[in-house]
Length: 265
Image (tube, rainbow, N blue to C red; front, side, top):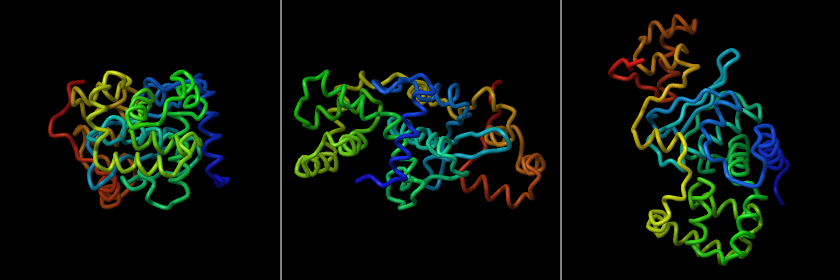
């Protein structure tokens, strides 16, 4: 039985999809646009260090996300949905390591954010609709890969979602799929069906290696200006009204490294 705090996360994901006009029947085709426009989060995509996958932070009345653009696009999408979960669930600022996104942290808030992300990207209703549309196929690895690509999530995440939705019920089937994924068998299949992955903004950023990617509304924000190499650490500390040591610890914890060149904007 799913714990109450996780059921709350699922309910929050469904409510968010409804509020954003997404419904529960299909995938989120361009997650970055939805997060920035519907949720009014400002997202910065850059290379994060020290095993950091993403971060959610709030500065005065502006909430924003830092996302590691060096990860696989499907993982970026899940991380972004995870950070959206922190926002929608009212969690405080957090720096998320890879273990948190992978569900290995043991922190109830991280588990909530993961459940939110799973339901937001691949709602149970939509999973069942996909199965119905494909005549309830046996859950072989190729079928799971196709489903994962349709929803823009990783194959391991699809296995988790199918299990959570009680569609993948037999432990032996889950064990078989997990073993194939551990061997990396799914990667070759993913290449065959790569065209089915949503062609969203995150995929375009990855293809162009367009990092750091700064949202228009945040180009005057002190942290993004620092990351873009526009201002130095002393100026950043002055703007944030903190001492230089505290601010340096903050940017290092997130893995922000100033760009070598000033961007052309």
